[in-house]
Amino acid sequence: MKAARLEAIGEFHVRTVETPSPGPDELLVRVEAAGICGTDRHLLHGTFPCRPPVTLGHEFSGIVEVVGDAVVDFRPGMRITGNPNIHCGRCAQCRRGRINLCENLEAIGIHRDGGFADYVLVPQRQAHELPLSLPPEHGAFCEPLACCLHGIDMAGIRPGGSVVVLGGGVIGMLVVQLARLAGATSVVLVTRQAARRQLAEATGATASFDPGSGNVIEGIRGPDGLLPGGADVVIECAGVAETMADAPKLARNGGTVVILGVMPQGETVAIEPFDLLFREVRVLTAFLNPDTHARAAALIAEGTIRVEPLISRRIGLDALPDAVANPPRPGEVKVLVMPGR
Image 1: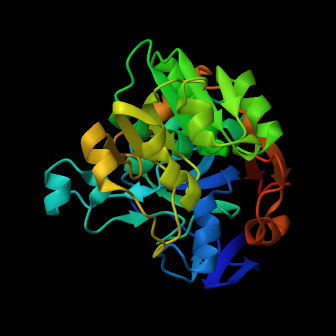
Image 2: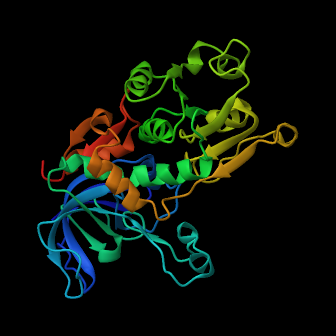
């Protein structure tokens, strides 16, 4: 089969490798679609830890081809989405129920071979069924949506509340929809790209703001801004220093900031503890998808979350190394890899 392999930092190539065989509790899945994530670019450049050589791709869905002898809940022909994050169930964090902080965490597409390939192995406990009637590309959104759900859970959005979303990539776009689903009546997306602002407003944002047009703090939190006094919740989805620094300043007194974006390992951002303390702004971080993947799969299967408008391009495996090595094109939200193309 063909697989896109991270062979070393900066070395990402499509190779012909042996098709794997499932173990007793594993599924061999024919990959229908896999999403390119910003983390894949961090992995390529060595700014997110991984274990090369490895096949990347942690956002994927596909059709079960072969099942191991101990598999009871799945059979060939079923469509599944794979939760890539495998916890041990034994360490202190797992016993506390903090499975996303597992001391022995392994991730498909980061520590073991992933979905940028014709086939991928998925442990049966990591698989979630999707309907065969679902467009196959939609299943690849389950993993990022599951991470967003964890952030939304932590944010504590109340009906009638206000939310600012920083970043117009796929995480920001999904968070806009989830914030509205949670009951927020004002949701402002902040991004420089006009196409992304238009898309956000078409899929649930009540307003958007271009930080290139003026001071973002004044334009949102100022007396004549979109949300005078600040937002109840600010969710950082861009993973860049500028928005990380802006996030607490956009929250109202007593508001909440949730960090979902991933900055390169080792980078830092200056904050003003005095301001956080005297305005009692909570700053939280949301990592991975603890117990949220099944909910994400259900939302995708039901069509509650609109993902088709978020698909910017569909490419084959051979075009993948170039797509990961370069930044997204202007206006792009999600590029999907279709190994069968």
